[in-house]
Length: 366
Image (cartoon, rainbow, N blue to C red; front, side, top):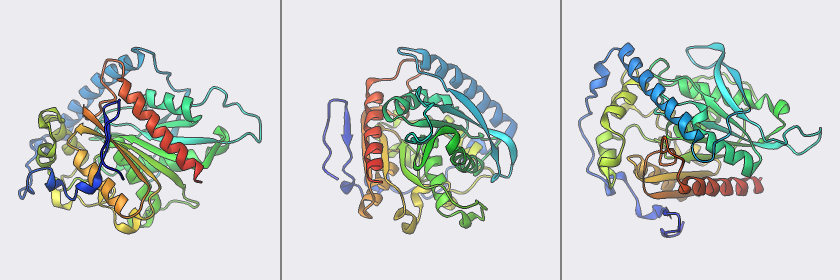
């Protein structure tokens, strides 16, 4: 990977060779675990706070999707079954679907690529339509059928249920290949923030389901690539440490929000040093899984507490010879591409196009 270089869209290519540890860019390791005050809150109160945030976010995203050039909403919504989670059920996982306008192709026509997307929201809020503009870009520029999964949210469904919902969705979407005329050799997983974690963790589960005694029928879906926007990858790093590793700690997610996220998703609470389950911290996956990863495209933000762990993950992939491309959006904070309730910035469309170019190159190599 070459040295960092600026372009006209205020984005840089990251030079991972200069990064050996988060401690190179941040304070020394935190020895004492942070005591999260939200861990003492009753679950109903966490749920009430999460619900209030969901309502506000839903309003904001609906307004944002209608601002400027309105984003096209899903063609349809399908309901998939939960089979892996502790909370199983029929038709419990809503999934929004965007189908290209000319998708009614005659028999024998070329099958379409498929992108299965996972929204952000810290595992406690968000919905599939939050990523309408990303889905529209995929439909228009890639000709893909796009599925955006409404996995169930914490605190009602803490770790690992959201991951298990996402794996269930991937498996069942592949079974619908004939219905949507999709090519199961060209499946891309994408995700934003928490959704980036879920995309990576879902790949891990599909690569090694026996590690957690999941019974998943063969054949397992084959994933052609991962597109990850500002994902959390390592929960063993202290939140304060992550925040102070950022060049602008004041622009990172506020502690009140991250406390709510952590208490809601990690239940019962897990001591920081024990958060090594690679479904939770996919950046800690062993080398043998790293070596099996499909191509990865990472888009990170300069003023994001998750920047350092994203750079470290990219460095690790590069050192082991994986196909990885990395972008850092300069001068922007976490979830910069969703500045509610305004229209998205030009740099968001630019970065989406860069990601799609990477995806096209992966397909050409199949």
